[in-house]
Image (tube, rainbow, N blue to C red; front, side, top):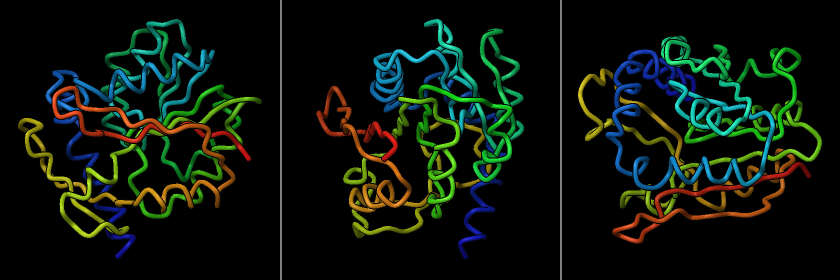
Length: 226
């Protein structure tokens, strides 16, 4: 079942690549437009990195945004159509590579080291221990791992507050989405336990708020190696 969910997740990002790129570039997703896009950019800039690796970069919006501030961004994603979209919109300063999380180890030497690693709404699978352990090899001395994910207290949507697979149907994101996306929900306790198991220490945690409802939209976590 776990493999089926993982395959469906990967297939979703292949099938929905064009629709997702349009939704992001046309700012159709309210939470991103009002809260989370700015939150992740501000968090990265506060760390003053020279090089940033955007893991699960999608169509490349974050890399383009960071490049505007003089940062050297590299984006990796397992979806070839999304990487194609990122390259087509490339500003000449960002680099992109088709690379799944399981392949990061193999690409570590070519990718090099980074002062900041970013996972922006990109940690959607159930077994995350291998990828979180592999990230240590990509981190420059003194570097940081920055994760933004759905706020678990808001994302439970009335379902039991326990780990488990959920489904995103992209309702309200516009037309063109061809396949729902399974994703693995984690409680806050599960996230913190996962970091400890994979050699990361939580430095700080932020809860970006929706400007109207004043409710948390996401969790923003800064981690350092143990």
